[in-house]
Image (cartoon, rainbow, N blue to C red; front, top):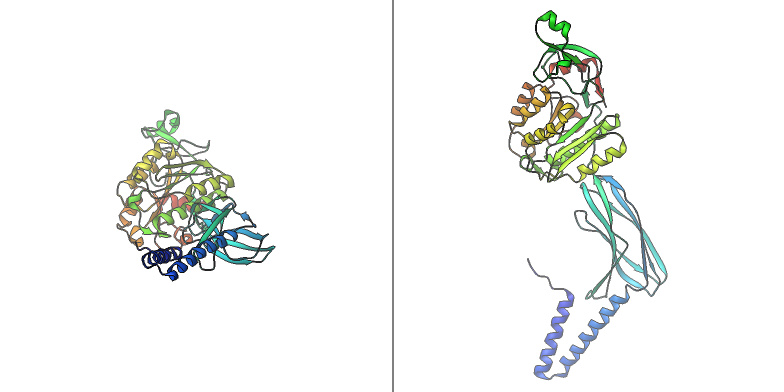
Length: 416
């Protein structure tokens, strides 16, 4: 790292040399130069200090939260109640990526300057805005004096959301036309059909008239409640991510999760969030705009730094009861093990959909076709998203949908 001397250091070096030459040679001119440099240092120091006297700095902020691409606005006013103040640099400190912009002002006696400072929220996350730093300098730029005004305020930048007008969840009806599945834990009193008994079924579900007629155990299949919980499962395992910055599987996954939460909650559905980054993210299902804020806040700080693979995340989700709800899995993982876990959840009560982020399109390794084929074999509805895709179009129609879902979808869909 190279060292760049400041003007103060240059003047200090000249003063040192002048004093050394004066003592070594006894020439009066060197003493005069030394005295002049000392007076210059004292004068410029006092000039900079005086430049901060009599300032009244005020700021009014319209903060709250913003989505990526939004703007935070601060109204700043600087009033001078003392002598003229030339070349004041006013800067609103913040922790956003990139340099902090400043404004150079010249204030006459008893004057006020006002302006609006705008900070563009380029990346999601937690940030700080403030304080206001005023810098005064002498005409030669030897000394710089700073003074801080105002307080530090926390702000949140939510992930960007996109409208998903054509995304829908299939109606949770009987899957009797296709994949054989175990019963859902939460049912309505409406019996839609009967099917063969599975070891996980309770005896209370047995339909005895059909059992007597067919000679084998048959159980009742209940019509499902379309208003059941929806869980968004976001894969934050660091080893499966690809791409950089906004064009990464991490950012695409967060944007998809935020957009789906926004759409489903607007439709009055109960939505939860489950992810495993550095720490587990577990937002219980809920409804309304306050709950949407909680989900978006959790997604704002979610980072793909986790060490838990998706297979283990799904297993933990099963222990927490996610297998009895609708699940939307968002992942760039091409690990062949997790599709079996997703298919198991589907067979044992969960309405599973997956969004596969193609890592190869983001510059990573692996192809999603083998994973999509495994999910298709397990009866799981699958969407595919590649870098540069329009999310509303990519999530409008699945890459694969089981036959029973196609049949029920043709009759009625739960559209958000």
